[in-house]
Length: 365
Image 1 (cartoon, rainbow, N blue to C red):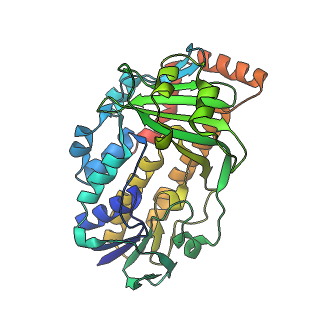
Image 2: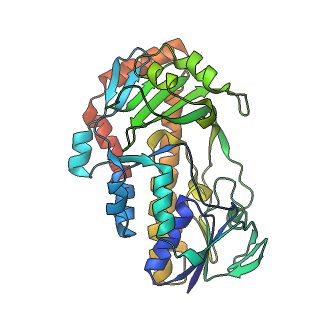
């Protein structure tokens, strides 16, 4: 049995590993000339770590990551609005971790047979019979996996043309070496703006920020970040002072509306091709890892991929919507709305937030 996987990112490589562990041959078609990831940190929640354990990679991943030991939301002056009960999460589900995306991709790539990955290959058509036309010819599999991102070509075969939705805000990401060690992590919310940071295993700090802007607007680079956030509470000014403009990434944030199906014939969608989401819950890569484990198991049990759709579509679409809603709340800009939001956050006990995470974290392989 063979799986042809279009896309060599986190979802595609994880899916290749999952199929390999079931004894399948795999072929990964990646349009880039090399598989790499730059410039960003990544949270892996306990549900994702259980998926990585199922792939046989959990221990190696944990060895190259840092446990998240504090988190929460503050206002721009540093006053706490909400605290995450990390101890309760750890006791019930296990420890969430933070690592560099490059390290995760490096571990996944090393676990896929070298001969299985073909780079510099652009896929142009996926057919329900298992054939994939691409720039080097045609590949055929018993299963075709669309792991080709939010603008997926494979998705067109499953459910036609679907346009991603703009969230209304753009994001900046950068990894810095701070002048002083940073021990905590979290987000700070202002009016139509947010800034977050977390410490990576090597002491560098992953920073991210958002601001309400029209799609395609010029973000202004590091100078705009310093203008927006330079007067916020420490350590934000210190982190921005350590940032390098050449390492700064800027992207408008999009997600996908609910798809009518994740499968069609021999084709299945995983990761952003199926359920691209905003990063407000830190679940994008986590859900791609879950997808990989479930799809390979379903495919190994028989030829019908429908159970994959049944299991994954409701769950992931729920998370997409929750992430979108949290982003809308975080990006509120009206002074009265922000005042009310902050008051509600202060009055909400950590136990309520903990319970709200249960439907997401309480996933088992």
